Length: 396
Ligand SMILES: *Cc1c(COP(=O)(O)O)cnc(C)c1O
Image 1: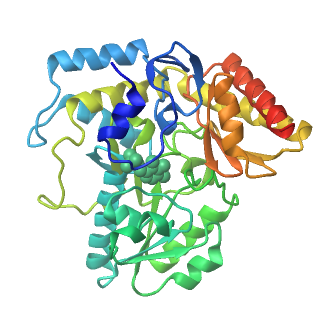
Image 2: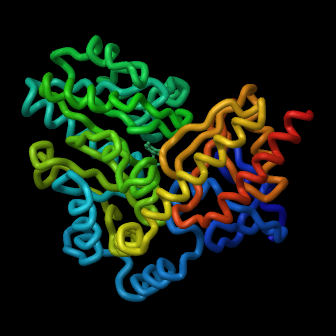
Image 3: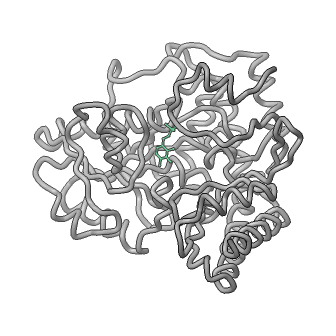
């Protein structure tokens, strides 16, 4: 086999830093590296492994579908695609779906939809208001929509038409809205931006503003959807309905899949407008149909809600006891622990040494996103490890 990191360094484009471990196997919330070390996985493929690792039911569905039909073109109907599409429409306020392969692709489709809607309904308006610290993907147009200049500036002229405002600032949205505005695109909770939870009335105010101005509300639920924040969609807790919504990450339990959903009035693609070779293929949508069914019928959503409350309470306990931990926030099983100093990398390294995988989403914030079927005992074990890491880092 040779040394995996050096083989990687020899041939891969170095687009990001990797942790110095090679994971070879998983089961539920646990994963093992090639040296046999066991870890609790509170990264879960970046909030994607909804049912944890090697879920037997999901593995059976994927194997069975692979033996039956992996892929056909979207010029044919396929049953798993209809099944998952029906679940999504039934369990959301949206009316129609298009399947892509990833979050960025789903957002690309959503942006195309909003552009076409602006041309047809608002005199050619094409601007989309997006938020600082938002994250919508890494393709050229989705980085143009992403409020982190470093992600787009190395690549020359961006797709025009994106206007940025501070997140959770309604006045800034009002000031940025012009006759050229077609839509407002936001995450209900910003994930990559540091698990930023807006004020409870923010999205309602944005929704009211969109109605008043006759523009679209686009919610990127790629990280927050599919039960991650304790309800199927985060917008349910905000008490709003988007016109366009995107989903990906957890939708097929780690199998690549994305979806854009729209209300009937915003669902204006016509034959020839958009397409994808693999988007929604039978393998991916069979996985998605199984994962979503487990969410609503297999008790996974209830578990995510209960475990999210448990994690929140236990992290709040750390904030009470440890001067280094100064706050916790989030929704369901997408949470953050805020630190008094920029030591999230140290905390994450210590936690890993104790067998817990975490993400340092900001220099002073640690992000938690375990599988949605994580157990109560695993939550307790993880927080105990974080407590030990806090003590070790605080004592230098
Ligand atoms: C991860 C993420 C994306 C991009 O998804 P990819 O599958 O990596 O392309 C877009 N929006 C949000 C909110 C995300 O968390």
